[in-house]
Image 1 (tube, rainbow, N blue to C red):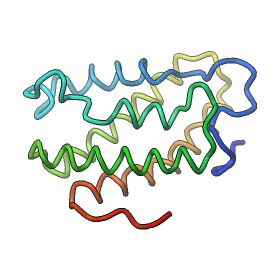
Image 2: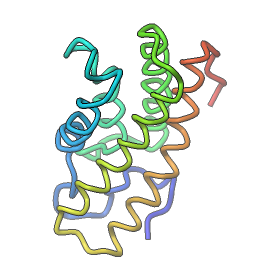
Image 3: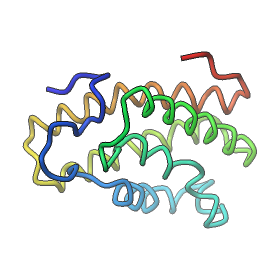
Image 4: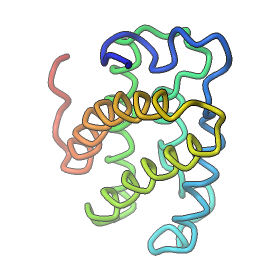
Length: 149
């Protein structure tokens, strides 16, 4: 089982991580691209800061320390919230896109050749890190400063 705070969720694996940020983002776009307000957004605006959040979350090259990853998740999450507020997205839309992000991650993990036990461990760690992202996105949307780490 993986422990939060131990670095990348994929540390200790000899192969590449079982999911890639670009695959998760593609699934996320497919789902949200048919829904409002995303279907009405300019193509460049749909992702917001989601790609950057995913890159920090998945940490494909496993070269980032846990503290740095959390700082990036907080920073990119807050910026995403600020961006969505500037687009006049409702806060429930932001909650929806984060729920869809979790689903897209689980969908990509389901397609991987990773064992069920490993998948459960990855989801558990990512869920813990989602709390960091959700809090940061809310701070950005409500235009609140980021508390010190």
